[in-house]
Length: 494
Image (cartoon, rainbow, N blue to C red; front, side, top):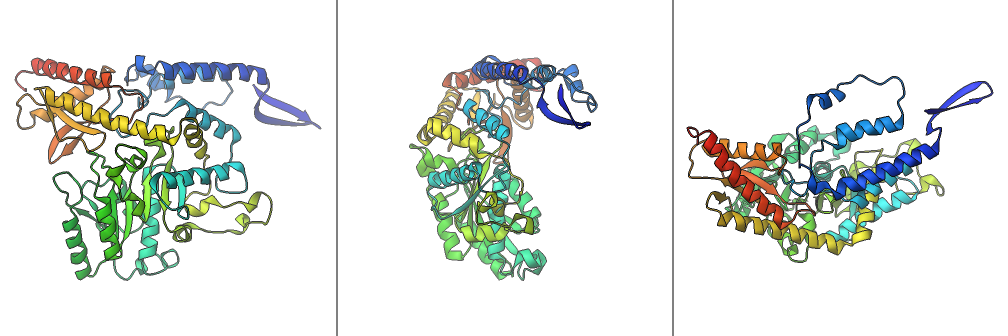
């Protein structure tokens, strides 16, 4: 029940509970349920379809009158907690996501309880936000003097870096005059495997999709350096202004990593900004066995990375790092009269909103900070190596199974394969898509699919600290079982 107070004849309300003891008891139950939820995650289906009565819950009209908190929680438990996306499950490999951790969840809870706005100011959460950014610099080998900011995720982190690149290379004051005043149209370059968020960035920056030139890739799906150099020369001759090279440290399709050292060298020679989309693989820099794969990332002008992937922070938290902190701040800083700094007091701290697009910012740092303090960065590095080794193990299982075909040996932790009993034409895609859907519907595993070198493949992205090799053994068994079963059901098609 809402607490109602009557003072001098005026009724005043609050959202605080009337009986804190009741809330405390329910909170203990919520925590107990949460521990059980994570402890037993392996025993539940990865994903399951919601029945109609559950879907109906989300079509209910706006509540006008109160319900007890216990009743509200019971509804959440039945309709939300029971039908998750599944990405914390050890056999969720559909998309490149982290798998969260309990300590990080506690961090999110405490951050919400404190309720601080991380737009800036002189308070502990602001200092912790900056500290986590500094830790990200250390993990990637960036200088302490670099700029950086925590954001919602990789797409926004990339937009931050590319916005600074645009403003630095435009040759005019873009903030004052706009992109229409740029004398020569800017050109950005990325591989033909680049993430779709970069197209969105070009559009949001007012440059348009045509400003992003896709460069062909080699047999390993890495950007072709010679083709890049030729494209830059061609664009200059045509009156464009080459501005930025976007290297990818782990493509979404296959995990391919561009030659970051070569790209950094070329960008320096051509006077281009060097941005690295490291949302998949930047944190390999802390993995002892595989750090060499991202050598050169420390030379970038800007990097996007995602602590909610291989640091397994609960969604959402991304990070943008920019080598030139002055250019970073100049790209976004605005100081209205109501946010001027003071020599002492609350407004004497740094204004963190000067490094991005949000004035109101959530306290994303605490969940990252707590997990890093509990486990240490070295353990997260070993877990990355563990996932990469598991991808190699799965590739070996696929190569040893005559009914399965491997697209290519994995570069890091993404494995593309298919069930291929000698089929041709469109039949393999239809069969493998059905395998993928039945794996999901039976709650066994969640895979995705993609196109590599013009052909359809199932895709397994292993970014989960709960995955075990026995899960991969199970996957291979179930794929072959389903492949045979579906082919037997439709003999004319397959």
